[in-house]
Length: 150
Ligand SMILES: CC(C)(COP(=O)(O)OP(=O)(O)OC[C@H]1O[C@@H](n2cnc3c(N)ncnc32)[C@H](O)[C@@H]1OP(=O)(O)O)[C@@H](O)C(=O)NCCC(=O)NCCS
Image (cartoon, rainbow, N blue to C red; front, side):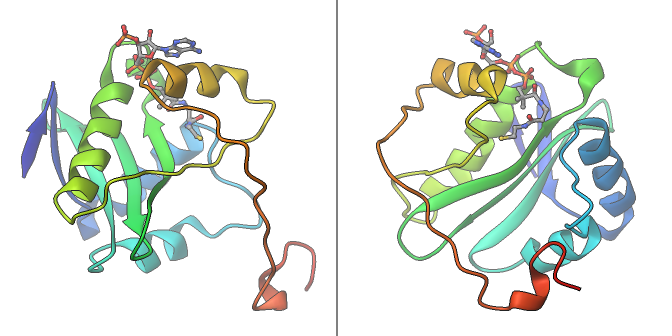
């Protein structure tokens, strides 16, 4: 367990899975084409990825999925309980993710967001993130996973 600001972080435990999915729902992060339980299972407790859960007074208040690909780090599902937003916990959860990466020798974090999400962009810019002029290209290696393909 580690402490960042007011949050005590630990890797996701079985008992927290449902609560983290509820947190993602409350934050509007779940999508019909993504299975959150499968996403959690895939990312947790791997050498190159983890789901870090932040608790305040024993209650889940924030979480982040963090990982690296052997070169750069990234985060997904950055979430602060709506009841606790705008109180500094988002900064702590990103600091925790950055420390997770730094301790594994990763020195740069790239993250993606929807272009129209000005609110979240403001948050990341406040934390020192910059927009880089790159194009994200994707290909469905497993086309059956593509939304609407079934
Ligand atoms: C985005 C999110 C994680 C931010 O968490 P938060 O706890 O509200 O953010 P914080 O209070 O820690 O804000 C950190 C800093 O960013 C600033 N900030 C936050 N939103 C901002 C905005 N839209 N514009 C400018 N600054 C902003 C805060 O004022 C604060 O600055 P300070 O530390 O200098 O006072 C949270 O709103 C959330 O869970 N949103 C829903 C899920 C989501 O969209 N996740 C991101 C997916 S890409």
